Image (cartoon, rainbow, N blue to C red; front, side, top):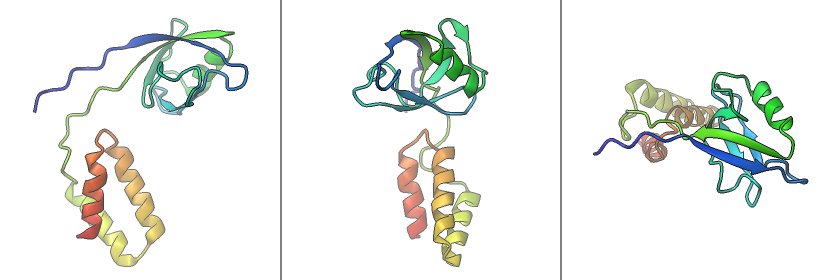
Length: 144
């Protein structure tokens, strides 16, 4: 399998909508990540879910707290300029769950703690979000 190209940062200019603002939701991670882009909103086709926000109006916010990023966006006026980038792909196998992850899933299932199963699966998916195939691996592990 060929190594994927590293993502390239891009600069987007978004115009504020009177009803839905700039039309995206930022997460609380560092760097701040775009969690949601409103369909048919001003950010659609400009920002993508998962984009890391690198700069707001030329100010580096790569290590800034969510509150700082939100403050800069809100104080932008009618337009905001955002430098963003999809995160670099992680170099891990798409098909391997480690032994401890499989054991945790089996342990939870054997105890019948279905709420815990959802929590464990959610944690596994978040840890392995880079790969949709992991969803299927988790499901097959549950069925073993």
